[in-house]
Image (cartoon, rainbow, N blue to C red):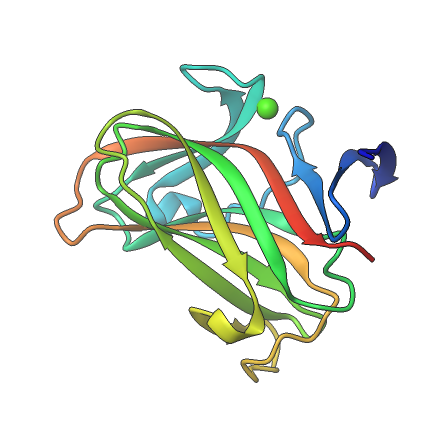
Length: 195
Ligand SMILES: [Ca+2]
């Protein structure tokens, strides 16, 4: 039997849907209530973050505008927040809707998590935004398929130390990148094993 419950998490409302006996999907962010963002080096790297409607609106979305020729990557970075299901493990699937507008120069998106020791881990998915529109991106996250890690503090072990917190997305560009574009993020969900 399907069940649905609501819970309040760090001041935000997250919804839980049962996905059968073993997994659950949690809505982490629908971008309707702006959260503090970390705009580190935004001006020098040529990007800006905002909350706005996409050309095909899903309510408000996270908006990342970029000039692809200014830096090899840019990011949409939250102040890290806790993720249900990632308190004691680093294992699950993240799904996010991304709208590309003039974003044909984008090569990949990375999902970034921060662990208890301020170590950052990323998982990369190649993308094709030659045509404007929404895509659903799926990031399968586990300690065995990490695509990069580095230290915010001192620890850089390559081994996630839960609890994991959600940090944001990084965007990399093709070698021939050069044109400005925009990505909109919406409906970020985490699928994890039931506790
Ligand atoms: Ca939304």
